[in-house]
Image 1 (cartoon, rainbow, N blue to C red):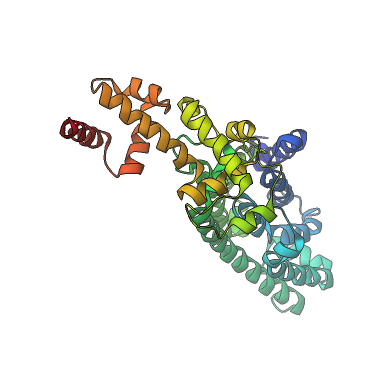
Image 2 (image 1 turned 90 degrees about the horizontal axis):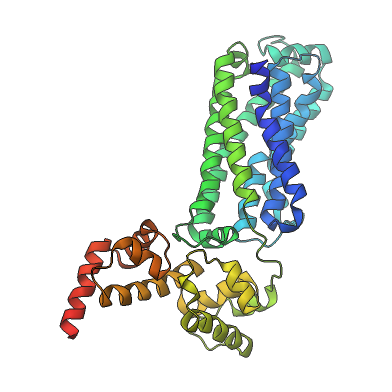
Length: 386
């Protein structure tokens, strides 16, 4: 009973997130909605694996083609999800089909081989690949399965590094879906790729060990499947906590302004937005709110996330996180200069950081110095000016 529950745990978790995404569809970001596709693939694949390891040898032969077809595109779909987090506005079959076509073609060829093979031979071969070594049909399936395994592992590695590349260049865009600017280190977005590592390593071990050796070992199955379940839960949770904070994308305006350099002359509409932005920062000091996120700014200024981010990037060569922390750093310096004996916790609260760790990381990120080194430098500068 326990073994069955563990084998089905990834299925339950993926189904849970599908239901959660569907029930909260209006408040979900575009990437989060697309994550449903990945979760659906997970349901099919992990249920298929359950059927194999349970085992249900009379049912699994019919499930294997679906397992091959959907399993082959699992990692490409996850890469498309990352593109939606970073560089693509929405899913487009025309734009994204190129990432799916090769693994799908390989899986289709394998499926055709299954259809053409004698059913009883194919059924027995699924649980013992050493059977029927002289059968051309089974030999073909054996070759195709090796190609599928190799493709799976190659896609696994490629997806990880492509995702990593996207995050290295566009992580601030992905992070804005979480409306979090506390550290500016894009931890939420990077965590999505780390969960992929957990799934990937488990899949890699399972593929290297092989179904034949995994079948009699319930302990190894349970360990690997629990890792699958934990990683799927993490992916679902990170996707579910994304916010739909960019409902009105303005591609024409953004495209025309992408080539502007930092400090370039603003258009009339940009000047209006910039004036509002500077007013709430410099006059109202909204940055002192430690819970501030880009959604709050969007609502106050009356535009959308992408437009705010683009203007800040063009005029200050910063992302939103850095922009806010610049004001907090200036406030921090003024408070510290006025009273050098203010304790760190109070400094963080008064300057808008909310916590000592957030303040310390912001100082190190901006100055390259430790908090104490920066304090000494500020005090020395203040003494000289006097």
